[in-house]
Length: 252
Image (cartoon, rainbow, N blue to C red; front, side):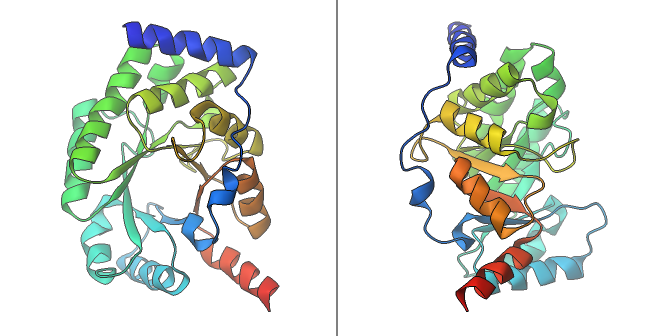
């Protein structure tokens, strides 16, 4: 409880005055593809679309793909030997699974080839003030993820949180050992905003300490640049091909 008390106190202090923006954070990413998590998480995704996604990821050299667990064996086979990282989701999109289910999801995904996991916090518990439960939820998934050699990115669903809740959610994720915080699932009432990304970067500190992934509504090259300037070092998007084509058109 002492840890939680300290985190709550820190959140209250940050609500009054956020830390300064970390110097040089967005400059550490030098190539656009290294920022992109190309996402395909719709309910009606077919295997042929996963095949197309993997070919696209190889062509454009995305940092990672993010897919539903059911498609992990297919993607693992198609991307074997490549540098494209395979990501999947835990407790997605509501975050309302019990913790032991999330842990089992994480373990299963890693066994099937995932090396990056995006988990959703229990948003309702966060809004209900049950912060210890949220911390424990992230901590259990974090321990399982890291034990399996993967990295954990925590979706806090910013569109549903008040400013203090966003700050505290980032602090809880950091205290639980998460590697990234993420703005959104893309299934909520809103996506990433410049204001939220800036807040999250200020709260978690420099990229060397923790990553920030902007996800939800990032559709253009201009969007990517704006999010990077605000502090994101990963972008979750289903529009990677369009973004890359915009970039290549600039370079002609």
